[in-house]
Image 1 (cartoon, helix red, strand yellow):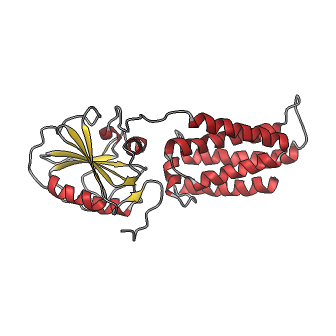
Image 2 (cartoon, rainbow, N blue to C red):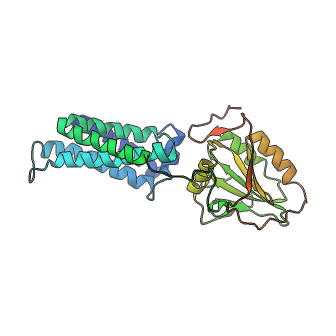
Image 3 (cartoon, rainbow, N blue to C red):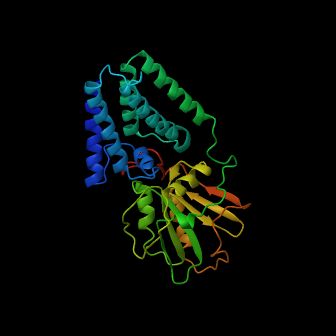
Length: 305
């Protein structure tokens, strides 16, 4: 058990150092980046707490072995607490975010093994706790049934906006910093001169190679992901354009480029320019294609078509 705790601690320690000095992650899946955006604290502090947990387990297995306080096993309490914490995070990923974080799962597996190895009673308590957590999440509702957003603003959730001197339209590009198709769409927007362009990434980005962008302080990638979830869309890029009586949802690189070439290089007036992006009774039309998209949860290779 001490060896497992030490190995897990080393892995979490590496992740902590990478977060601190470079902001990188040892996790190979896009799901890890998504999960990192879901916590109210920075990933560094979350990983640091995990490091302290495994170090505490490593130390207590030697110093407190076979010791009890008021008939309570302190090592068992420590292990159970860590297991419940990781179990809740895992259930949230499964039932709410619908994504997979390989790093999170490995940490959870280590904590599970430590609980099982600590004895039959500890195994029973931990597996019971996991069953209760999964059951609780499975019967909760985390989104509306009609698949449409209730009231939230894509404008407030945008990372930045590039305003034109005489805009005729507003468009919202939902994208990921790691999606090559998204990058091609953004590159095509250098000369766009008749649209107010709002950029709505589903992950945190520091800079963007696009001139004239004004940052928005209220940026929240969670809202942009929530928009995709409510529309039952699991791929990017997605362009949202609000019409007089409806929303146009354009999916895929080629569809978006074709739409922008006709919508953002004209002088046609759009009377709803200053309208809110809150959803109402308007219809939603989705223009989609099977190519030119990246999965929200799986990395998209640069050479993909």
